[in-house]
Amino acid sequence: MIKKVIPELHGWALDESGNPTPVGMALKKSKGYRCPVCRGDMRVRTKNSKHYFYHESVDDCTPEQVADALGGKWLLTLLNEMLIRQETCPVTWEIEDHRFTADVLLGVTTIIENSRTHYGTPDIALLNEEGKLRAVLFWRTLEDELIRKFGYHGIPSLVVQSETFYSGLINNHFVFKTLDVLGGWWLDRFSDALVLEPDTVRDLFRQMVSEPPFHFCGSLEPLDETSCVLSYKAQHVWMPYPVFELVIGGTRNTIGDITIIKQTWHQKDHSEIDIFHVTRRKRDGSKECAVGVRRSFPQVFQAQRSTISMQAVKAHKSAQEIACELAMQ
Ligand SMILES: [Zn+2]
Image 1: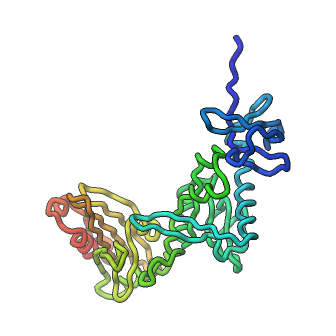
Image 2 (image 1 turned 45 degrees about the horizontal axis):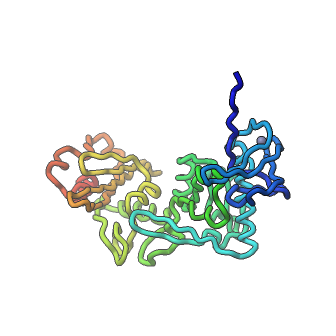
Image 3 (image 1 turned 120 degrees about the vertical axis):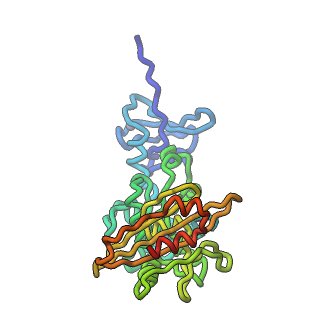
């Protein structure tokens, strides 16, 4: 029996000059494409009105191998060309109901592939004149923990949608439209009234419990055009739950219509700071949020504490009442 071999459909190839080329930018019917892995000849084919590269002869290479061999070099070349031409690279993304736009190449002078940084190795690092990271780009490494680590330290991660990227059905402009951005709200300077940098936000949370009574709670209220703002003295921080999860961190639990994210920070003086983000979803689909913070010292660590109880859910307490109760336990 003759086994029918179905040729692999590839998104990437090298062109005649040896440049990585996604099929979205390949010239139809043009020859001279090669596979970077086996060096075999490749051609463009159209199937179901989509374009693909295929090997002209025997094909042992997987589409992932071929894309992995070329994608990084293509992105690096593209970004470096934009830098030389002094083009902007505007990226838009959303967090909660807020839409952000920032030029990720602003102030960038160096772009490096697979460069080891203090927080790990991104696929591509974008650095400013002082050698500081402006942003990191991931197209192959999709380790959530690594990506979050950069966001925690105030470096936005640009994540290429890998399925689209590997399909090769992209071009210079389209690729930046498919980016997911993690963090980065501090790049847009969307409100001068808000404290935005993650380090400064964490400092503010420590300040909230730096003196007696060592606890603080407040509801998240609209400020100007921005919702979910926590105010402490004259300072305001934007704290919708995706921001809280990235900047403060913690574990999330849901009981009924209440979701609580809790984080604990161990301090050098052996005290502990517990931070709670409480969201209560209301019947009309809206939600109310509050934050509670408490600092406890070694002598009271043994005191028994309950987390949110079913009574609180049944009693229909507001998010702020729950946050205050948690902070004062
Ligand atoms: Zn090949």
